[in-house]
Length: 488
Image (cartoon, rainbow, N blue to C red; front, side):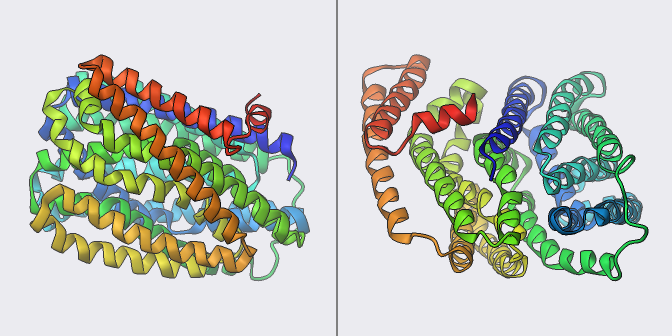
């Protein structure tokens, strides 16, 4: 893989993710601390969880399937690529029309079915969210197939900033959770329109096309989308059904604690998500060229840096969760701290998943990934049915961690079978990371024991970062020159 191209793509996507992270963080604080009550925030979270599940049926696995064939045909038959793009757009618009129409009619009944009639209005309004967010994510995934990560980054950045400004504005104008959702719809709508315009101008309008699509091309895209749909469905169920079940068994305030904790975790995952999104097409390219050794080297290096970043981060979350939440969101949100502490393990698991899952899709192992994710999501649903009544929101978080760990174990086994990873070297690296994490944790605890108040959170985090960076560089775990090359 061309290092300069990767560095440029990674910086673009990381910048967009950082902007998205900053915008999401500001919006999270503004909504949770100032504009919405805890009940309204919980209702918004519950509605978005349901809408995320319904969006599965508009998205299916078509965008990722098209991206995979775009990557392949760019190397073997470029004239077919515009036909792949056109097929994907037609499929997506068709599913949005059918699913959106049905949901607009049935949204109120679904709210009653899940025992949350108070979100009925949000679900009906959310029909627009399903449509625009589907288009917003669609264009980003297709540009991933073209390995034009910069365009994906631009779309994400525009949607994120627009959502921040418009959600806050519409809460003030319309009021409550409905106003926030309308802001989400308009913001993501702007990003989605930009994505479609860029796809047309850069990837279709002036591109040389084959006279006709290759025989069976549409069928192959649809067929490959089946395991990807299963994988995406499992992902969505893992990330959404627990929130829905918390609302079913408990109340909107409990949902607000759970939803806030999951948003914080998503906030932390931006670097891993950027890296995984940027690198995934490269694995497909290397496999197409018969360079699996090179692909394995890239994956191992990526995994090492992910572990070095996220294992210490998870330890830090466990230690500072309660004072940090009180400082940022206010004392009324402190009861969310135990949920966030349990999710600390999920931080590591999901970070590794971000750099592993898409890799399997682009290596042509989507079926195996789909089986693992499908089994995991069913197990997660069943475990939540037991854990939420017994342990509340903490039980829901624990169920997610347990099932995600099992799924990740299977996907790592599959990628090892595909790329023959150096397991011994990775284990030694993990042990070294654990040692650094222990020293960093001791430093953070020492500061918290000596300093009180808001200053304690800031100083302890800075002390932890300093110890982590010093030991990582001294131990040879962090190559500053390589990092500098990528980021400059």
